[in-house]
Length: 299
Image (cartoon, rainbow, N blue to C red):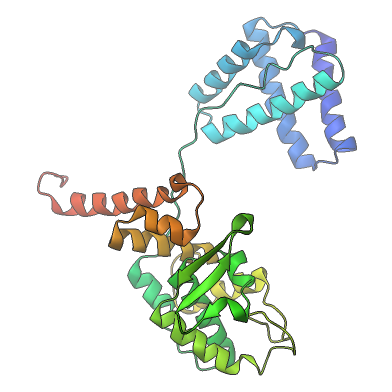
């Protein structure tokens, strides 16, 4: 690479910190990724940025991956390079952007963590003998009963719950509304909470779950309360609101084998999003097989 082309990297990093106001940590990460590209260009015989093409970048990504970099790290590296190439294009230093169609190797899809049925029962078995405990139990039972997202539960109003029909109306992503069932345990816990809610709620407050100040409960408060009860109940894993949704989906799928039904209950627009839970179910079956089948046991 010519000195002027090498200097473009430093100019870009200054652009990130001074104009785009990116953090020093992010700018340093970009700089490391671009330094790796510079070294590779020297080996590949690329002498100027205008000589860089799609094939060069694909080979660079492949070599990065074969050299031990994870798919996610390759994705991050290519993202830094694309930002740099767009910068060069805006400055009129290259006539075309070779990074547009270059993709990193697919990263393995992370399977969501779940609680098994026994762990969930343990978490929800505390005595709700105070108003705060009644509210928290109602929140967690509703999470697990209906597979709600955190934002969906926070936004629930009193009018969204139909105790007679045993359903709750949920407004999910994209402002889409769905009706989901509420189980018997959740209904019981919610009834106990609603019987005392008026002692806390401000006049005119429509939120189903309120803080001790009488206002709609925040997402952060719910996260902290769930974490508190998980520690108090001695669970050995980090418990967060979305873990209830993952557990709901996994347990429903194990019992019903109805992928489309679970998709509707979760409010997933694409069934491929729901299919991740079939892998969780298979992992469970694979463990049973490994533990039980005579030909599967390790000697």
